[in-house]
Length: 287
Length: 335
Image (tube, each protein chain N blue to C red):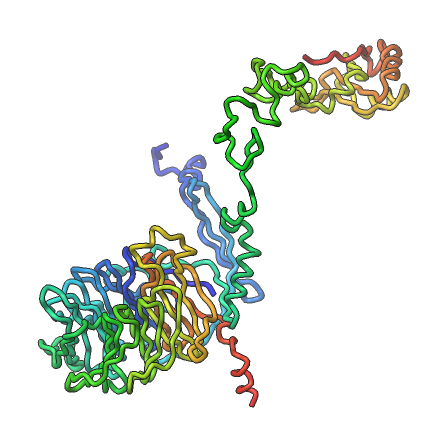
């Protein structure tokens, strides 16, 4: 956008003109003597950030040798020449806190702390009282070193092509046994159809009614009142438009008991509600 | 306590020194610069540039006007502390391993390496404060170490003696006027070089650190061994703390073996011993390489350590450090 003339156009308002401009820093003095500084800056992502700092100034008086005081005013030199006063971040940093309390028997204390804190210890200590056990013959050697490796199968594992029961168990693991790949949901022990999303509505599918031709002005509470006459209603869902919040014209009513739902379906189908005739049927299972 | 980490050097530290007032800290490393730091907040005051090789040693005059450095480029340089300018360069035939000012600052000793047919020497240079530019060209005294080269040296009380630690583990005492050897004591195990020597505030006794895994407190007057502090690792540095009766030892696995040891086993900690009772009372860890040098604030309120890892860590002591007392000390206090 270029300004054609010197005429100040409202659309060329400076604040909008230059998005990189930052509001000036504001400093306010509070009643308790602290200062509040509000400043703006851009963060690494280029977003404008407002920083509010409360500063309390404490004057600490310290008596030093005049020579030391004189040295404080020395200018920086060498590689530091021209740098601003105050520690620079590339040469000076603060380390993590070290708890140092001298004690006579610190060695014993340190050993204890090691024991408590360093749970892990060395791998060697952890495995000190573990023994190597062969899975084939339970001897004290690695399975791979077992003399019966080629002739015997591991004790706990089923043999390939064993009896029917064994076979199924073997199918539970991938790549064992003789069977081909079995998808997880068909494996033994897996829940029927595996997990499905929204599973909590699944079970009352059988007692859910779908109501259509519902007025745009319908309310969930009204629907609940209408259907509660037939039994305990566990859920009322009225589809609404996301923007206008008006009813879309259909609803789902879940009953605790299927017989109540059947009765409601029979009675309410064709019921006049807000100038419209409802149509009620059992909801179909989504596939 | 929260240590301040100073990372001004790119290579391992060789020596650090506080000035007499303790407000400034000077550090030298194997890279070619000298750094000056404010000890209170770790701010770098400046660097002294000019050396052509690794800098082995640094010392500051008692009035914090002059700084002396000794380097592997075979020179001792004198710097103006305030401006960072090099005032004087003395050339030596070999590398300079240690420099130290007398307690009054009027003389400077320099320990030179034994190499290329040259014997190790201790040279004494006179320092002129009237006109900083006009310094003597030649050493006023030269002590040649014929038996075993000196690795470290320092001045005793009133600059009466020069005390030197040798490569073979012995400590010797020279008359600082004539250069005559007065005493020689095999303080440490034979052939374990003495890596550091630091004096008490009044310079009547000093502590030596050696590769034989021990540090000894020795009297300046007759080189009597007063105390022995036994560590479990070769020591590179030892310091005496004023205000509290402790000594701080620094060391660790030799630099060449570091890659094969973990930080825990490497023993890269500053060890605190009680000066009188010789017991180890605590350790401060943090470095991830052996400690090459340890220095204590002249007021005893802080200490700094420089490591093979290139960091200087400045620790300001907090309350438990000052509160710690042995039962006998407490009883004494009650009386």
